[in-house]
Length: 103
Image (cartoon, rainbow, N blue to C red; front, side, top):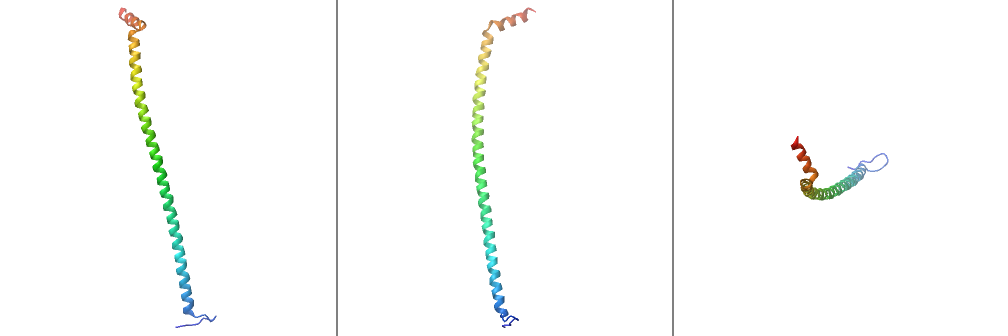
């Protein structure tokens, strides 16, 4: 069945050309969609990796702050004990205690 159109081009041949053109467009569209998908995946992977590095940095910072906090607590205990010892050895604080006992 090779019907001709008014312009003389056979209908079957024209249909095949249109089908090939349509298939090519679908392949191009598919390739473009695939490329966009790959770019999106790549962008998301990079973003996840960046967030992981940020989390690692924050975790290290939290650990450092915890360590510094423990060190400062220990120093505060030593200073508190030192102040207590000075107060008990000082005559100024002892006279205050005796004045309150006299009243």
